[in-house]
Image 1 (cartoon, rainbow, N blue to C red):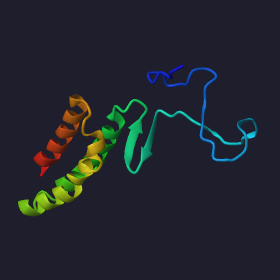
Image 2: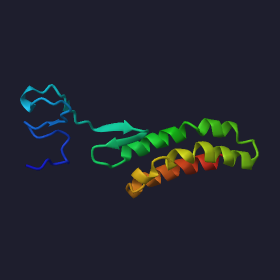
Image 3: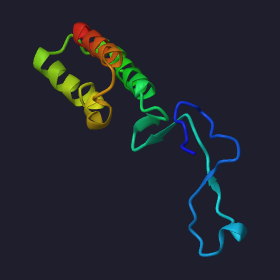
Image 4: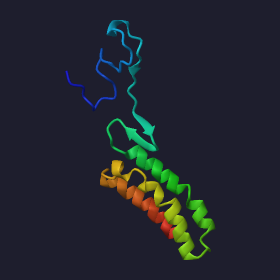
Length: 122
C-alpha cells in the first residue's frame, strides 16, 4: 500500500524504522522515525510538502531584522551602503537558493518586496 504524502500522519499501523542493529526485527530496539511538519537542516527549513513557505518566511524575518541598521547608516556614502547590503542582505536569500529557488511565484514575490523595502530605506 503506497503512503499518501498529502496527510500529516502515517496510515494507522504503519511506522518507519531504520534498523542499525544486527538483531532480528522482532527483538530490535531501534526507534521509529517521527513524522514532523518541518525541520531545519544546515539553515534551510524543509517542510513535509516541500512548499518552502516557512523557509522563505524565515529569510524575510532575517532581512527585516536589518531594517533598523539601514535606517542608522543611511547617511553614509552610497557605495559603502551598497557593500553592506551585498554582505548582509543579499547573502541571506542566496544561501540554498538551488533548493528553494523553484518555489511558487507568490513566495518569491514576498521576498522580493522585503528586499526592495531595504533598498528604499538605504
